[in-house]
Image 1 (cartoon, one colour):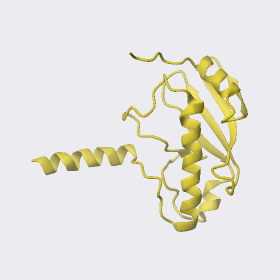
Image 2 (tube, helix red, strand yellow; image 1 turned 90 degrees about the vertical axis):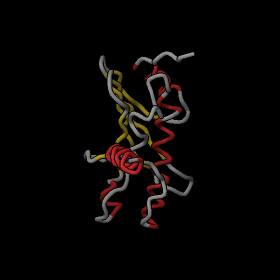
Image 3 (cartoon, helix red, strand yellow; image 1 turned 45 degrees about the vertical axis):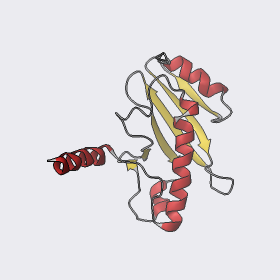
Image 4 (spheres, rainbow, N blue to C red; image 1 turned 90 degrees about the horizontal axis):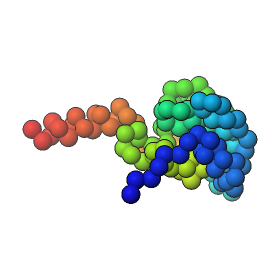
Length: 150
């Protein structure tokens, strides 16, 4: 049985009532914006994040503070899109890990906290252990598999 897509209003209500992402936001006609603090562990720092969801398109999570580039001290940030402020790469588009029937507070928000956990570990070790694949990497791996098969 296919689950029904949630409206932006339903997503906003779920965010407002969720203990997982206490914050504040605005519901606009075509999109929602939700600002919240995320702490990836009891020993980690607190990050200010902004979640945006438009009527169409994927959810986007940006880290507003502290500045991730400053924390990285000149190193290239791992697993982010090139937006400023950095937009987190939380799932592979087209791989059906997230769709509009999934609540943001139960998927994207915890994924952002997990990303921050791996980010803090990366700051210390220099090795990204969060896994994942970027859309360009996905296409490259498909091409490589196709070439191996021939």
